[in-house]
Length: 375
Image 1 (tube, one colour):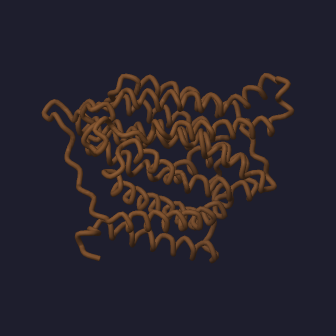
Image 2 (tube, one colour; image 1 turned 30 degrees about the vertical axis):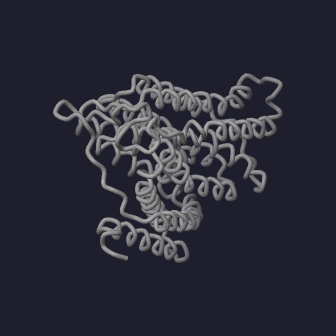
Image 3 (tube, helix red, strand yellow; image 1 turned 90 degrees about the vertical axis):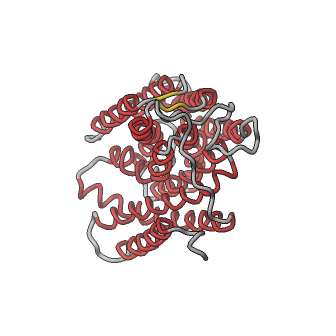
């Protein structure tokens, strides 16, 4: 394989991922304490997610912003799915529920906020397709509302309360059907059909405005990897992510006790951030290059798929475990996610952002994290 196919940073990520996976396996099966196996497994998950991000980035120019956002967020959520399933098998129900909500919050507050701060500081006001952003955030709001309705039914003691598991199963199936129906709109290219997503938005406008001194986004590096290599590494990363996620969950409970944190905080913050490493790396990187349309598509599609796919699939998978997962969340989790989705919807509605709006999202995330530190 020539040096033109894999550059130095590619090789560093590949080597780092391999080393981290091996170290995670060693610490898993040796007496390495309560915290070290957890930290090493989390690093391995993050590096594998970074590798996934590079693979999808190489495929991005071929697929367009919409398809790349769906693919990126779907593959980026694989570690969260694996972690959630193994946590259910271990009986960590509170961690799974908090992780579902935390994954949504980590993307729309922390990751999107960091992307707006980095992109805004470097390029000024970032502009993106307001039509796509409105469509995605409306879907996110509706999906989140459907996700928390079983919780509301439980709070107000409706006749549906004794049937929360059946209600959760029905809601899960409906959300999965909605996800399938939303795919055509998400995958649709721009008017030009073949124009790279990094160059134009879906409505034909420039993908980003990068400040007063420039009128176009920075050029993106042409895809170097052949399709077979990118797809092969995606598949290998997914398999390894499943393996490392099992080790991560195995080390989670001892680490919770050693670090004196609650299960709610562990799920809402620690597990959610570890499982959202793809968006942390790729979304922020895209915003730093001035590709706001691309960045928003990648980042906002992830919480949408968590609400439409990850949570419903975990509910269905819980039928195969001894721990029954329902969509009845703690009241503070519901309040946090509803407030956050409303805040993000207001910010992206006009199709532009700046660093201060990003800082506001990060501040809200820090406040929510502090509230849940004690459980």
